[in-house]
Image (cartoon, rainbow, N blue to C red):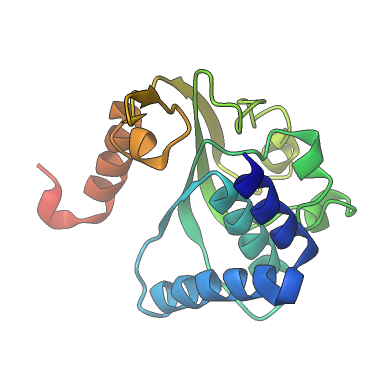
Length: 184
């Protein structure tokens, strides 16, 4: 917990430019995929969902990028917590300026018992994005993860999310919809 909180505060305070650097690395990959005309499914776990959200907000409001994410898949996300909502990019803005406008669909998975995803429902916090037409849909799903480390259950571990049937089904369905060789 101490390590996670330390990393969270380093990101939020942008200690030594770590937050800006991290977002820049993600944006480079998103721009490259867009330039190559590849559809994008952005999967983000835990603090990665905050980094993804902030990066997409910056891409939206920088005025020069046209990156479009077909699906944002968040897993074990702290974005439902008021603490995070007050600190993400655009938090002080209103209406369109408050949110990224480059996400087509957003699916959020939260494991039962995941303390990082303490508020597992994002639809009630980001419903204005739907009302403004910035998203086609936002779906929250509760899942069970079963990853164990040294015999101890760790419902927040990315491994548990990534092997979860709901995550796998979501990714496979998205992939099939974008790769003609996989369509039956």
